Image 1 (cartoon, rainbow, N blue to C red):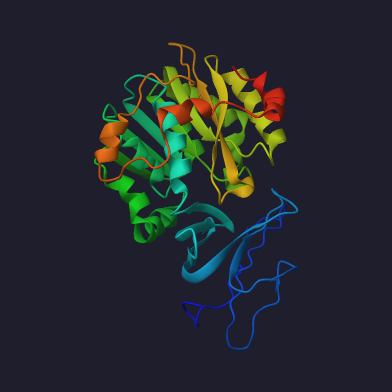
Image 2 (tube, helix red, strand yellow):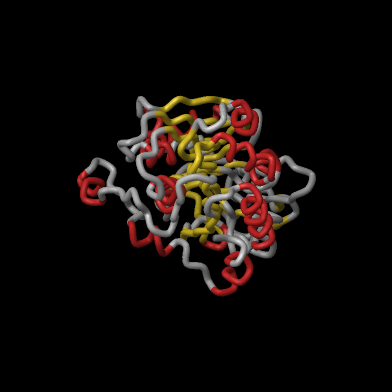
Length: 334
């Protein structure tokens, strides 16, 4: 183990309606705590993500060293060095990103909406305190203003310290950081302010639950110009089909343009994939499946930070659903 002084580190969500254990079991003097949330720490030195949102399974990463542990006003925050995925950011016991596969999430949640409309100028990011979405939005030269509303300042600070290649997005002069509640921020936004809203939220339990409910989507629609687009994290078709069906139903009621579900692979997320809801308001038609504003991939490859995951082909493919998902949600989207 890289640091023999590291102690046993259970981190859990502070919620009555969920048991979410984190087994980070280190061999230390005096032994180790054999139980974390009533679950045996079977493999010493491994982080295991356990939650009622994915019952009966857990994904584990070997821990080389715990780099940071803290508790903000909103959540427990941990950063550790893993054996195979680089540094890992964990909020309330749930992996948010790893250095190795963050590109698959950050690039897709950003470029799926922004490449689908011509010349986006004003973009709002809700959540996304690590700065990765900002980094990707900044690739679009047409963008003039990037607002981000993140509730937890500690997430921003920790990301800047431990994930500089992700948090580099904050260095763009077009970015304005607002620390506060995203729901309240959106309610105060004048109608038709933004071309695109990107909601980089955690799972729909606890503080993030409001970001999946009808009033929030209504606020998003109001904040968008005619033909504006929203892209929001929308869970896994393998684990959360009931949640996805509810999100699709809400969006079909609110957004009178286009409503689509897309997905990408992220190995360190539960089930190895994550989905996105992409919607547009009434106005100029938006065809999410055929991007009208493609990123110049040749230019990106020459840049200091070339794209690692996104390209035009994978953009279109992201909307192809497996048959079981198509039967459930395909008929409700358009």
